Length: 131
Image (tube, rainbow, N blue to C red; front, side, top):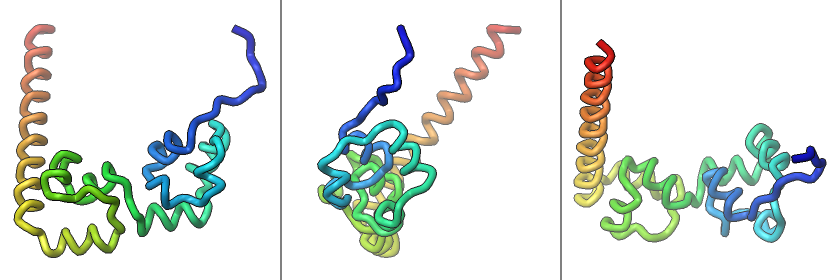
């Protein structure tokens, strides 16, 4: 395999996903072009104003909304949240804590606790197997 000066490109949707932003809210030139690995690195290390604004205020894509609310993407769907939300909308939900959000956050906490228990159990088994 020879080294080449050509750069790998990614589609705008892939770049938006990696940046954690909602593609339809990006500038048209971002949506219509391709993003090279070098451009992606530049966006990550030296984000332009539009990217900083999107990250700060949204609208945010579903995975980001789920993370900020402390629930799973499935939990969002069960709660009826199907559209991207702004930071203000997320904050309002966190302050209001509707029943579905409290229930989903409880479920998510149980999932995390179970994952931690299994990880500890497996680590203990590995330690016993070595000894």
